[in-house]
Length: 392
Image (cartoon, rainbow, N blue to C red; front, side):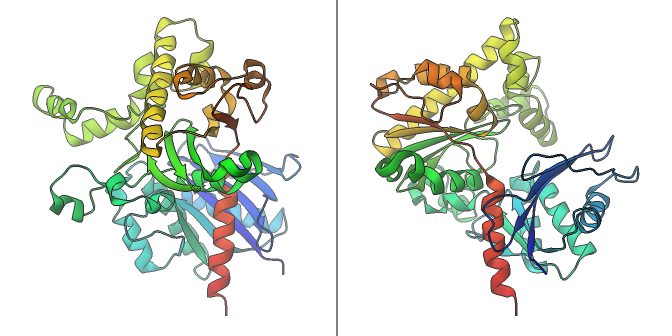
């Protein structure tokens, strides 16, 4: 039987999935998503050539358990494959998990204990693990962490200026989007040659957004910190904020911790500033001044943080844009780079708007590229390796 790996990225109301050949996990055999869990569900999938694959979810598909049960049956009966291992994106691995790990009951419990550090992501990541375990208890499952890539940072980059006892208790900068950064780091030599091991900043710009400074294709510093709230302005998250604002909201507005969690994760960022949408595509075509203000603030904050990371690197050799906004919004790239000319960044406008990979001008001291990310491939490769180690 051919060995197949199922990659799962589970959210609050969706399950994104991809299937890979375990012997050559370099491109997906098929990809898809189940969306609308808890409401009106939908299924969409396509094969490696982009051809749609048929599938009809039953009306009883309302949660991760029933969705994954249906998906596994669909894979076996419709696509005619049996899954031999599953890999999961898990947002937070804390200090303990610096590498992908085989999921056991003890590992699951340790990851569940990290939920307060990623309340919008960790429970849903683990819901898929739990559902597959109940369905196929002997199936090897591997957790791949968004935090792992940043464990190469030195202590100075990870510490807050807090009492040492709190730092020792685990309150530090962990960083996220590591699976995306790991993919970009792996393919950089294809685009930058010798510059790939130089001073590189990767801008992962999407509904969640962060930057990573790399040297030798290793993480040196990043904008996200203890949680996925920190750093850049995002779709619905505010990014870095004066902690005094939170004290003010507690004292003067009588906001509870739950109130602030809801505010900071769901009602800030592009959504909060524009009052219109968290979707950059909608804001870019809107005539509303509030939409332009939100886009302008997003780009300003990104440019300012790029400058900060350039200081951490001691200069800048290359700037990489990736993820939904980074890959598909030339206007955003232009606005950000327009504020970085003092760093030696210049764009070729025609290249930027035509979908080229290299978008810098011929006089730019900094290489500027658009490189698609692929977290699923990273997860598939790790899963193949870890699962192989545990087979008899």
